[in-house]
Image (cartoon, rainbow, N blue to C red):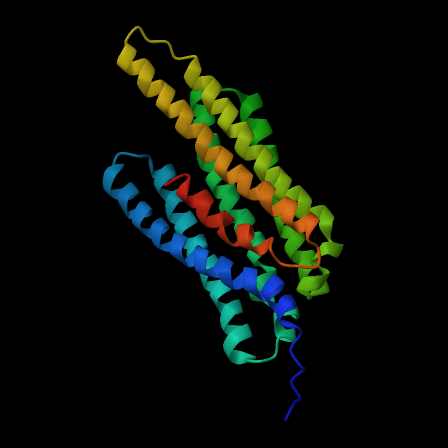
Length: 250
């Protein structure tokens, strides 16, 4: 029978496995909100184009995949290898590919809004810059997963900062870029009716708040990743990034 390594001190478990479990709890709560909001989207926006409906369906499928992968990691650490804390550090595919799947969800959500930017501006420059940012962020997310798969251990993730920082900062920049373009497009709409102006102001405020929230989560992920390299608090925003991206669209 294999010998199980002695567990580390409680403070190490609380600073590593603790944020992961808390992030899973928050993610599963948001997963319920996502399902309800997607249901409401299809019930209310029956006349939306097939393109939008397909993107929402794809995001729902991928976010369910992400939640399943994260739960598989939790089950592996707490059931399959119960009592062997080293298995949380010695990760497998379900945590390696969490980054890439999160990047994919973000890219789909950003494509949803970029198409609206295109509809509002008809500018190939706006479309090209947005697409370049989305592809860069997605590519960096996939590169982060590949690097993570090579080192395997979660404790060594601080050794691969380049692709992770490009992914997270790129995500935040694209979110803010899309918000600025949409707000600029909306502000160009002039109306002599006060009620219409009020509605436009509300749309601007909602657009900025939504994009600012998803961008803030990405920035918070960067800050925790850089500030606390020996701990896993960055998993808290990481676990909910994908769900918040879906909620911003549906």
